[in-house]
Length: 446
Ligand code: TRP
Image (tube, rainbow, N blue to C red):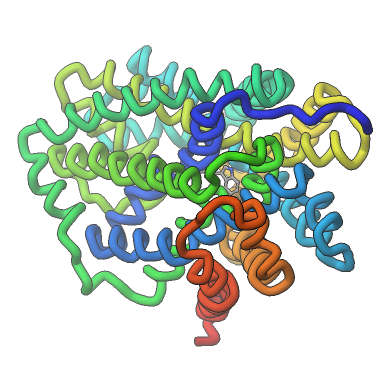
C-alpha cells in the first residue's frame, strides 16, 4: 500500500488523544471505589508506586514500538522480529475486542444516566428507590442495548473521521471540557458540609486494609488506566512523527491520567461521606450510591447530570482508542478502507457486547465462576489478557530489542534521553517478574 500514513497534527493533539485513551471509566468509576475499599491513602501510594515502577516504562515501550515501525501491533512485531512475536500483537487485537464489547455496555449506561439525571428519575435520597431505578434499567432487555448501540455509533463516527479530523479534533475539544467539569465537581464536593471526613478517609493511609489483594488490584488498575497491554499505545504511537520527545510525552500522559483519578476520588469520597453513605459499595457506587448523594446536595440534579456527562466523555475517548486498535489492524493488514474497517469492527463489537448487556437481566442466571458475563469479561481481560500482553511486550523490548530500543528512543544517539539504563532494567526484570508474581498470587499459588 503506497498510501501515506496519517499523522497527529500537533504534539498537543497527540497528548490529548492519548490522555483521552487513558482517562476513562477506569479513572472515574473504578479508581475511587477501589481506593475506598483498599485503605484510602495507602492504596493511592501503592498505585503511584506501580505507575512509576511498571506503568511508565511499559507506556514508553509501547509508544516506541509504534513510532519506530509506523505499523499496527501485528505488523509492528512482525517487522521488528518475526517468528511467533506477531501473535502478541494478535492477542492485543482480540483483547481490544473483548474490552470494547463490555466497555460500550457500561458507557451506554452513562448515556442513559445523563437523561435519567436530567429528568430527575434517579433523583432520590432513598437508596432503595435509586437502586430500583438502576436494576430496572440494566435489567431491561432492550433499552441498555439501544444505549450501547448509540454509544458504539458515536465512537465509530469519531474513528471513521480518521486520526487528525476524527480522533485528534474530538480529543482536543473534549479533554479540556472534561478537566473543567471535573474541577467544578471537585469544588462542589469538597465544600459540602462534612466533606472533611471523606477527604481524610481518602488521603489518610489505612495500612490495616492492605493485603495481597490490594497489590494485585492496584497493578491491574495501573495497566487498565494507562491503556497498556493490548497495543493501543503501539497504535497511537504509529501515527507519531519521529522527532517528538517520547519520554516526556509518556510522563505527561501518565501524570494527567493519575491526576484525573485522584481528583475523581476527591469528588466521590467527600460527597459520599457528606451524605453519610458507606464508601465500600464496590462497582455499584457510581450508579446506585452517587445519585442518592447528589439528591442530598443543593442543585444536585444539575451536578448529577454534569457528572454523567463527564463520565460519558471520558468513556468516549477511551472507547475510540480501543476501536482504533482494530481499525488500524484491518486497514494495515487487510487493506480495508478506514470507513469499511470501522463499520465492520463496530458491528462485530456490538454483537459481542450483547451477552454482557443481557447478563444484567435476562441472562443473569448464566454465570462463569460465579460471575455474570460482564464481570467475568472484565476480570479476564484485566487480570489475564492485558497483563499477558504487557509481560510479552516488556520481554520483547527489554530482551529482544534491548540496545536497539535505546537507539530507537534516542534516534540513534542524536537525542539525549536520561535514564535509558534504568528503563531497560525495569523492562527486563522488574516488569516481567512483577507481572508473574501478580499472576501467581491471582491463581492463589504464592
Ligand atoms: N484506560 C481506559 C480507562 O481507564 C480504558 C482503555 C482504553 C484501555 N483503551 C485501552 C485499557 C486500551 C487497556 C488498553 O477506562
